[in-house]
Image (cartoon, rainbow, N blue to C red; front, side, top):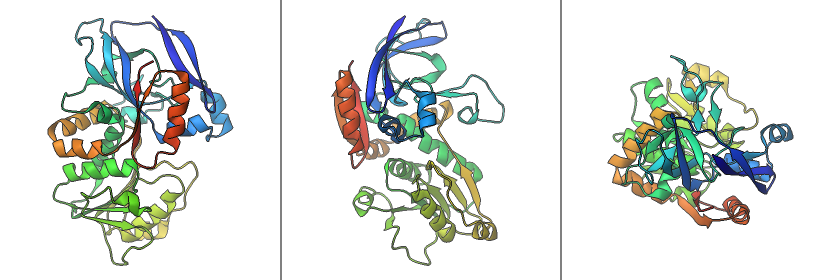
Length: 341
């Protein structure tokens, strides 16, 4: 099968390249329908990664969040037109202990491996899951990010102590919003406090029990468990605040990605007996749980619909550049493209 792949070849420069695909009985051919942009995609687009990284990974098709329609299933299990979510993590090995998203041999789309900006995509059949009809296609476009939030909270459930009184989330961006929405479903009896840098963004977290701008935190404020969703240099301040506002023996889930090392107050962390757990990406089981939550909870679906901040139809390479430029200035929410190339 000949396929058209839209690859980033240099900063702000896309080119279409023809690739020969081999379809096996264990594969399913799909056509992308709605794709969502991640911060990692915009960093590649603008060339804000180290030059050594760019030389190693480009040319490469971007995007690892999206839904597609089934075009051809050699086994006939999925009908053409079936809407499916695509799982970007592609394991090539199995380990009884290490999850698929942490195996160093796993491939991840749009990170050294072609992402979803393609005419057709040939996926192993365990890398797709049907999307329930209750889920809006625009929300379905970023189920991958929802699955990351599910993964982080699943690891919190497995690590934390019995204190679920107050859950604290540091970060007022997309990941913080998604994680906060999921906390309300997975920890319904807990108080949720969200900490951020922008009051205008914190206003979107109307379902939280409390919100605070990080510059003005009450000295005696305490949370039972904490999730860091800031990333970048902001993660250093967030981690420091968490260490000083979490109860002894609490668990801190680190989800924000930082390109540079950050300082951690280990003296206080040791004295308080704190547990740090880093989480990254997600696997099939996280997608399955995310879909179950979204199907069962109209409230969660409605809140995530509020996260759609930019939506445009993309039909050409020029449209792709225009869309990514618009995504860079999108103040709130996810940028979703209707893929029609």
